[in-house]
Structure formats: structure tokens, C-alpha cells
Length: 65
Image 1 (cartoon, rainbow, N blue to C red):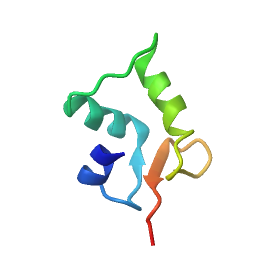
Image 2: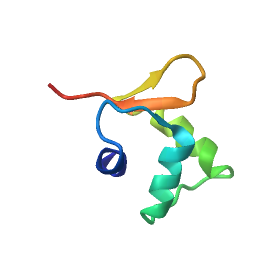
Image 3: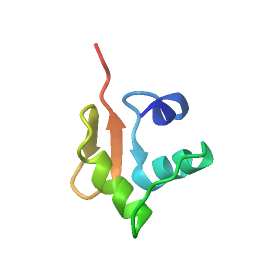
């Protein structure tokens, strides 16, 4: 989440493929047979991350008040 917050910011929408690309550019690796699918499965479980719309592929970090 820190990589996304640094590059995009809280509350700003980002497609999960772009988020994944930011992580890869920052030197992080995701394990799994299909790393992108593994990444997507994991971000959908993270508290503080919310999906935007149904099946849009876009997420955002919830803003902390």
C-alpha cells in the first residue's frame, strides 16, 4: 500500500494492473503460478483498499480521517 500511496495517493483510483506495475518497478515480486492473479486476489482482502464499481478493475486506498 505504501507504493500506491507514494505514487497515486489515498482516494485516487488506480487499475490493479497499473498498481502491479508500480510494485514491480519498485522491486517487489509476487509469487504464484499467475503473479498478477495472485496480486489481485490479495488486494481484494486488504483492509483499507476498496473496489470501485463492479468488475472495473479499479481500486483506491480509503482516506483516513
